[in-house]
Image (cartoon, rainbow, N blue to C red; front, top):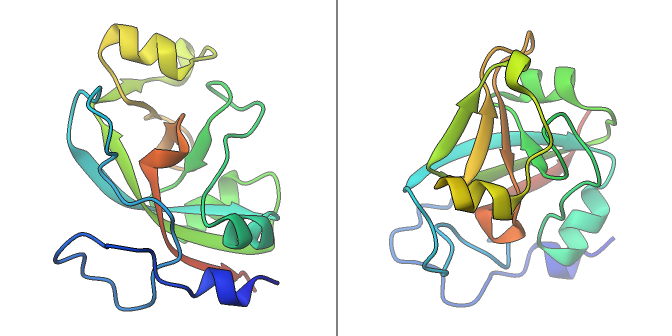
Length: 153
């Protein structure tokens, strides 16, 4: 396990970041790039079996598939994250840059890509009417600032 990597602070954290623990992320939000359409940031949960890989890399990677395409999926609460997840074992708490979020219903589900969202003037997708609560999806790793990665009991 990459404990020395997972607990190492990131260089030059933004002022007033407000973190109560050492930084685990190589990114902080909002992203440094200029092509964003909004400024919404939320603290959200992700449940996975890839916690060790995320801690070692200090960033999250897009999955290869999902409800609205190959993205990084989040829930509002840990309980919702557990209910949504296809795998278990680790809980990830993160600040997620949603920017301008395209809110859709389950009847509008299709595969999105970051490039397609950018053409439409959006940064992320929210599926609002899931039975397990809203599903938030981002498509770039620089939209996720890791706060905490822990084993889930």
